[in-house]
Length: 134
Image (cartoon, rainbow, N blue to C red; front, side, top):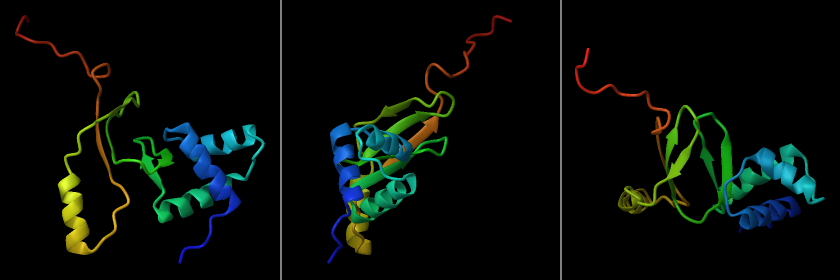
C-alpha cells in the first residue's frame, strides 16, 4: 500500500498536468512561487523523486545535463542537437515491441521509456562542399 501524497506532491502534479509540457525543477519552483504556493527547491526535488517512483512523473535528461519533468502520458523520443539544443520529437516508437518483451521476460513493470538521438541539426551542420571544383 502506497503512502498518500503530500500537499507539495499534489501541487507539483497538478502544475505538471496544467502545463502539459516537460519543465525543469527550477521552473516548477518558480511557477509555484508565482502562484503563491511556494515550497523550497529541495522539497520540489524530493516530491519529483517520489512522483517518479510512483510512476506518474517521467524525467528526460537533456544533452546539457538538465532534467525535464512531465506527467507520464506517453513514451518520448527525440532528435536533440548537441550544438543549439533544439529537440525534435519523433512520433514513431521503434522499441515498443522490445518494451513489451522485456516486461514479460524480466517481470519488470515499465512506467515509460525515452529514446534520444544526439547529433547536429540541419542549421548547425557544417556546410558540405560537393564536387571537386578545386
